[in-house]
Image (tube, rainbow, N blue to C red; front, side):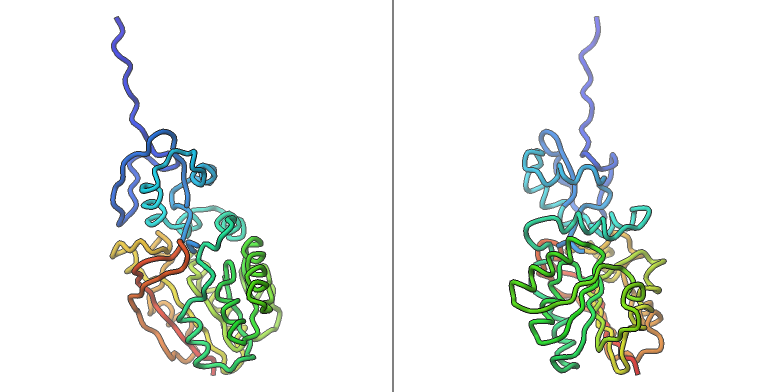
Length: 291
């Protein structure tokens, strides 16, 4: 007589068996069918979650309890998924991340970016925002009186930038691309902003050099991003899961060699940028001037 059917252990759909997010706390298996992904950064779709499961994760019918969903959203990073994709297709990736009615990282500009630019440049100066996402920083700077160019690989992000600019009745030039040197010709700017622009490590020095090439004499790089302490301390406020994509201060000093460093320091801050970057974070801030 055959024995009772063995119950197969449940697995989270899209996650490798036994996978555990560094720094996270376990949560119960969801009842019923599961799904995946999550202004994430960026706040963020889930690292180690397959592309095909993202639509399931967004549907309430997926059966994921809200507490578990929030836990996963707060501990898994879109940037980590991006790092694992081959080939690197930032436009396609961020199109999916920004494909939502609200703004993943909110509508308000990064406070450090606004303060750094306003303390050093008069209104009317030109600012290039690289990797500007859905445009919160570009639009915020335009509202402060600056002439802004928003460079972003995501067509969805650029469309939302234009919508946000229209909402606040300001003008922002939008250009689709990754490397400034590929699309901006010989143009120069009074400031280049890089807010949480984390890319694969092989690409980072090239991107930073390209940004320097588009600085006008006396122009400044303004950068804020996560440090490896974000992962080491188990922060759940966003950022790539791949530590190699995070910024050590001395690495930034090397990337921007030849510029005069006006500020380079690590800080612990409280992020409140949509649902993508929220909570205590370990960041580095850089202001560097071209002489």
